[in-house]
Each structure stands twice: as structure tokens, then as C-alpha cells.
Length: 304
Image (cartoon, rainbow, N blue to C red; front, side):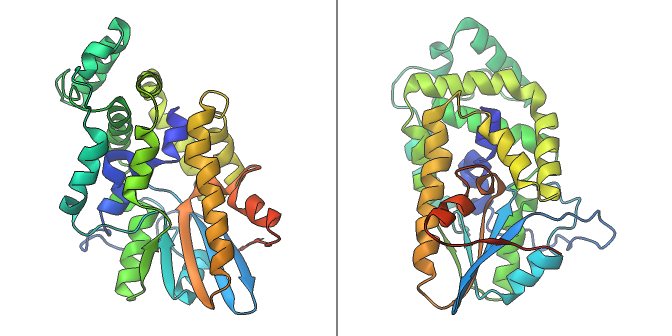
């Protein structure tokens, strides 16, 4: 489950990749001396429209140079940026949305709904973060699971502030390019909220079981992303299809279908667009490219 939720890392901690808005103004641009990364990017086009499709990594450590070569060239040619969700400059403006889905309304504390073994694991995980065992008693299980995931990612130095969306957002703002989103924060939060309580608790249980593997998983995903290995990235995520087909469908299959439709319609409008969505959506049988192909739209992988 951790692998599946990593593909949806933007949702964790109130869709952090959108809420952070842009990379800190004082953050230096990636230095030339940093190791070079070559994440995957594709293009679809017709006579008057070009759409670049870039696989983002929602949380990075800022220790590689990826916004260069074909990615930067494609971005520079583009007149607008489209992300999964548009950046939010004022985090306070979305607090009502977060609370709508994160707060539990059952009236029963979360810790009281867990098995003794899970309750013990949860308390231990929270203690490592300096939080009391009842820290999430008023919150939904899915929100607790997402927060644990992001908090542990941050402990490894993987933050949304260094992620692809932050870098792209800052560059677009610097260039005065319009920025829009394919989805909304409320839609992303609602996907998890629509799970049953039992499904959400199972999600939390699996999160706790896999926390010890966080560092290794992030390294594997970062390695796949840095090499532009979209199939390797997708394979890690697709492992979870058998375990949670309902969530897999909601997080991946349905959303990719929506994006393919958006791209198809956007080709009817002239212009050059840079689209950045999670890299895990560009591999496998239900990838963005595969669904576009079913619509008769050819995508081409760009190379350096």
C-alpha cells in the first residue's frame, strides 16, 4: 500500500505539492556539479498543438539536476503549465477542504478502533515523530496513514518543496506562464474519504507494517525516475493492484482515463502545453500513453 500511496504523494499532508505553491525564493537552482538525472518526457502533437507529458516526482531531496536538457527545452517552448492540481499560494484557503475530509465524524477515537497490535505499532510510529499516541484520535484513518508516509519521507530529506511540481511552478511564475490543474485538492482528498472505515484502517495497518521499508522504497523509485525508467516505476506501483483493486482503480485507472480525455480535447486548441503528472502514471498497460493510443493519439518519447 505504501507503494500505491507514494504514487499519490501530492495528497499527503494536504496535497503538499500544491500547497507549498513554489520552491522557496532563497533556494538556489540545481548546481551544475550535481549528478544529472534524466526523467522521462513524451510529446503528443497535431499540426497546431504540442503537448509535452512529463513524469514528475512529487517529493525530492534536491540532490540531482533534472530540470535541464530535453525537459527544460520542452518547458521553455511551452506557453502554459498544467499540473495534477494547481498551486495554492495561501494554504489557509484550503483548510476547510482538508478538515472536511480529514476530521472523523464517527465520534469514536481512532486509537479505540484499532486492534491492540495495530494500536501499539501506531503509538510507536508516532513516538518516533515526537507525537503522542492519541495525536490522530480526531482524524480519519486515511489521513493518519498519509501523514505518516509524508512525515517519514521528510525525515529522509524528500520534500514537496524540492519536488518537481515546486520547481516547475517557480519556473512558470518566473516566466509568467499561466498554471492550471487537471484536478482539485477536494477531488483528490475525496478519493480516500470514499473508502470504507475498514478499508482506511487496512491502509493505516499496511502503512505501519511497511514504514521500515520507506528508505529503500524511496531510493528505488528515485532511481527509476532519475533514469527515466517509467516501466520500473510503474511496476513498483502496480504490485499493489491485487491487494487493493478499488483504490488502485480510483487512484490510477480512473484518473489516467480522465487525463487522456483532457489531452484529446486539448489537441483541438492551438498552442504548446507542458503537462506534469506523477511518473507512475506513465508505465504499464493503463499508462497515459496507452490510453492515448487507444484514442488514435501517438506519443513520442523525447531523448537527450
